[in-house]
Length: 404
Image (cartoon, rainbow, N blue to C red; front, side, top):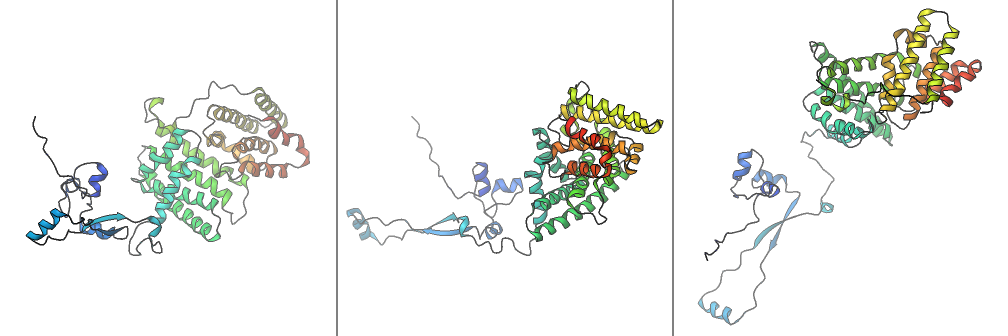
């Protein structure tokens, strides 16, 4: 039977080969495999110097053998060479490291940006919907695109910083994240506008993701960052109408690039709601509102604006029922309403305000979402303050009738 060929086993290979579980040729200053792959090798002097703070040498000296008869005989032949100390590298316990200077001041790592990106992928991404596919999109696919397109990455930084601002407990840290949020929003919006001007009619998913983040930022900042002119939530209706309509146009153009619903990106692929049947109490309330609106106005264009806004509200309710995990779908209503209806709200038309109150009642379902900031309740309170006692019965309709 042939004798099995012996081989030497070494534990002195580079860290990169050990991590890949492959044999290292231990060539210095860079092993053959690391050299072929074009990566840094732990056998190089520069790598060892960089890791000097993490490793410390320990000298292991083999234990002396107890003298025996054979040892005495060998010592008569000549004095044996002392055993060579074996150098073994051991990793320091993390608690032993001095963290007073975690990074060299001369290094240019973008630590604040890394913090914002980390927060977005580990925290913020999970607040932008309740479906797993949405989480995966915001956590992985969108940041990967951000590595290629600066305006998208700046949008990620802006939303992440704003989210951290809303959860910061210290005044100093809150001010820092507040400033970062506004800074990166300005960068994202300016570069995004320049991009839209040179798109030549072709829209990509990157533009849709960026527009969604910028719209979300404006929506959240209106509730969390105090306005200098003390504007109210109702004053935002025109802005939100234009923003959401712009996002929808981009989404529609982007959707047109796909061949079928099965190939669309999850963010562009909500469940259809054409066949959704609303609960009887909701349909009855919407019908009552339609009759009430028509009875108060003989003006044709005004009645048409009311009618379209109520129908848009019905479609929004259906979309929400079909997609309970898509927490941004209530804003579909802002895209469906007409400019004439927005003008009526700005004039504080009573019927238009009641219709807006019904939509605010829908927003109240998502009051726990940080980016809404209690907008539904704030809008309802504003409208009730404007309508006064003359419309007490109308005011309670959204609160009592529209229970999904």
